[in-house]
Length: 142
Ligand code: RB5
Image 1 (cartoon, rainbow, N blue to C red):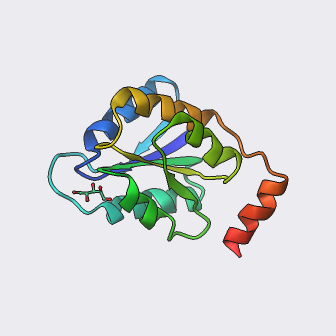
Image 2 (spheres, rainbow, N blue to C red):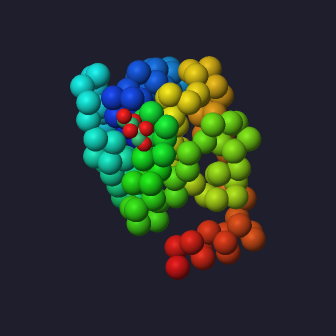
């Protein structure tokens, strides 16, 4: 899978861990930064990742900040991007199966690395169910 990754200073350590892990799993990772501890603005990274997904350059996006919230708020402003903050594996699966989300937002100050790994696995392993959910998702777009 082609996966775009982004983080601010609050999420960079977890993002770097996920980038390594996803690469080792054979995914094609596009790490759009940030790349250090310096304080940066999360909307800059959310925009890049969301536009990569909406433009077809990535199949999925993963964004990490302190809470995941600012990333999700920003990513959802990009046309046809559906992003959500997730802190448990069940929601990670459902946000794809029912909501057809392409962007996962994580809070590095909320969850630990082990839980993040489990959440990412569930998110990437899920597929949209379509059917009645497609009707509902199309109402979001309209
Ligand atoms: C940065 O301090 C923090 O506001 C950011 O990482 C994120 O939690 C915003 O939603």
